[in-house]
Image 1 (cartoon, rainbow, N blue to C red):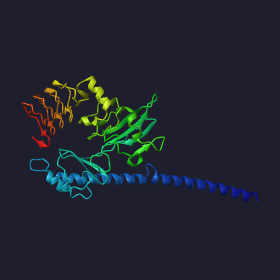
Image 2 (cartoon, rainbow, N blue to C red):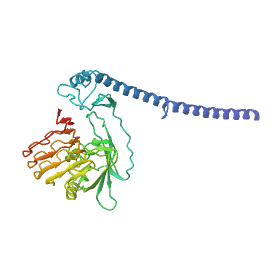
Image 3 (cartoon, one colour):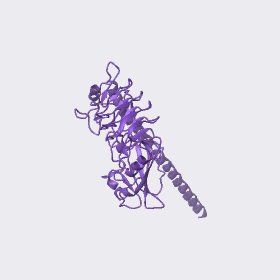
Image 4 (cartoon, rainbow, N blue to C red):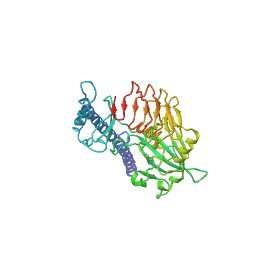
Length: 371
């Protein structure tokens, strides 16, 4: 009897051990299949990479077949060739007679990827970079990465954080990430439906905070502000903006709605300068000397300034933006930078007193016309 009970005990222990071993083996099998480094994960990654390379190769082939005899891309051929790729979009729509590529670089969309076609014909995937979200105690956050082709995928990775100041009822707007920024606080963005992430309260909306934002921090890695004039729309009380060295501004309107900040900067200096760009010259008069290391005179920087008469630029200036000196009716002389490469549309429109324009030899574009 005792021997039988002993035997049963041994059998039970063996069964338990067998079950434990089987459970361990099952766990290992499941982990091998669906774990972070499992077979299925590798299979998904391989499928993603294959899809990515196939999309890239399709565009490369059509671009390669679009060159003229002078080794430059023929835009007519490029548009026709890219139409051969099923599902390819430009500006969020299929290429057509009314939706064509007329200049490079440009971004097209295919199979969920944004693909960049450079002026020299190089083709590459626009990579999405992970943002380090080290901002604490934010009230709201939202994605404001630039969507170059309206494909649904941003071609830059930028997140805005709205943070309440500790010592008062004011707020700071912090931008972190890499690439070009889309409109930061558009008036018609409505909470969750447009990509908002709520903080402590479910009813938070940017409209409730715009008038309370007094400071903006644009972090390193962000390269440009938005092309439109809605970057700080209705944020009338922004008095301080910290620009990282990486930031380029091409249009005065990008900061126009930060009215207090712009007014303060005009009081400090008649030329409002951010990094290597002249953003505003509204308070300038008579002779204007552009400082060294300025690369860009922004769109509309001196628009409608009827007081300036002479402008002298250093050789660092490469770009004069659209309408930069439009309607400067008292402007008589303009001394160009030897390294000037581009003059924007209407840059000197209605400058009725301008007596002489000597274009530099290296000038590449005037508006949409190539020299």
